[in-house]
Image (cartoon, rainbow, N blue to C red):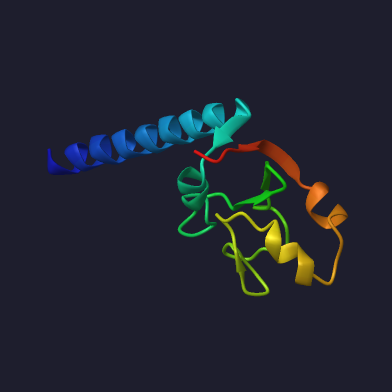
Length: 107
């Protein structure tokens, strides 16, 4: 009886994870308007997506090989990196290749 309860609990956890993932995907598909506080939670850590702000847009850098665990040469995902571009060895085209998932607001 205990093993049946463990299987049911395990399946319930899986269903919960799937629904949480689907909710996250739906949220992201809406081309959301992010505050800096909201953006900070998309830091690429612990399985979270890695997003960066640049010139008022929010880009998904999760799949980029240049952004491992939310880090790119000392720059952290979850931040507005507009000012950091001044010292970057690449141009803005490197960022603009990434998928836009929203806009960055001041509030």
